[in-house]
Image (cartoon, rainbow, N blue to C red):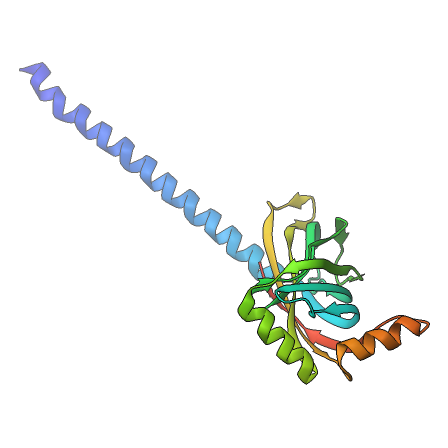
Amino acid sequence: MTEGKGCPKHKGEGGSTVRRLCACLLGFTFVLLLVILLVWAILRPHKPRFVLQDVTVYAFNASMPNFLTTNIHVTITSRNPNHRIGVYYDKLDVYAIYRNQQITLRSSIPPSYQGHKEVDVWSPFIYGTAVPVAPFNSMTLTQEQAAGTIFLMVKVDGRVRWKVGTFTSRRYHLYVKCPAYIVFPKSTATAAQESAASEEGAVVKLQMLQKCSVAV
């Protein structure tokens, strides 16, 4: 009879231990979430801000059906708006898109670190020789070029890390889209012939100062 009376007591002690463990786990989770919230509230992290400064077109030849040859020089600035957070740009690729189709090769930007409130300037060439273009895009591209205005999207894809003090975060994917309206004052063929004899050799240079959309 003595042993039978002792069983409920042991069961009650086991349940009490489980409840204490659950309470500790919930308390730890609450404190962790509170710390994360406080850090976010204090630091207020913001995404880098990108601006497409200018575009210089040295070659834009769509005369061959369903193929495009380009040589475009772009200047892009990136600003870190954070007071206490640095940004590691581990990988950045720049290229051009026309109607959701990539029309240039990817140009890589060397890895770099961007400190608090710093501004970086990148000036890569994005180009492609006889790049295949979808037939419906090729037709529209030829029409827009003849009209004198082509809308491109300059994209930057990469990997970034955030640095707060001695802590460095994991890598995040960076997506940047910069609209670019390319205005040709003359037909591409005429401009190309004249630029070949000019000193600078550029078909057209445009000051953009176009803000880019950024997603991380």
